[in-house]
Length: 70
Image (cartoon, rainbow, N blue to C red):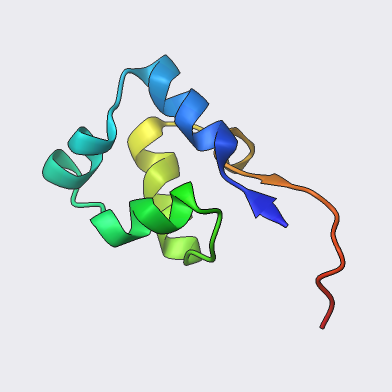
C-alpha cells in the first residue's frame, strides 16, 4: 500500500497549503482528495508535486507491504 502521509509533512515544512496547490499551482482538488484517502494517483501528479515542493518522491509517499498482488 502507498501512503501519502509524508506529503502533508513536507508541505508543512515548505509552507505550502492545499489552497496554494490548487489556486497557484493548478493541482486538481480531486487529486488532493485522492491523496488524502491514499488512493491511486498518476505518476504525473507525483512528479508535479515533487517539482512544486522541490523534494524527492520519498518525501511525498511511502510503501507499506500488504496483500495487494497482481
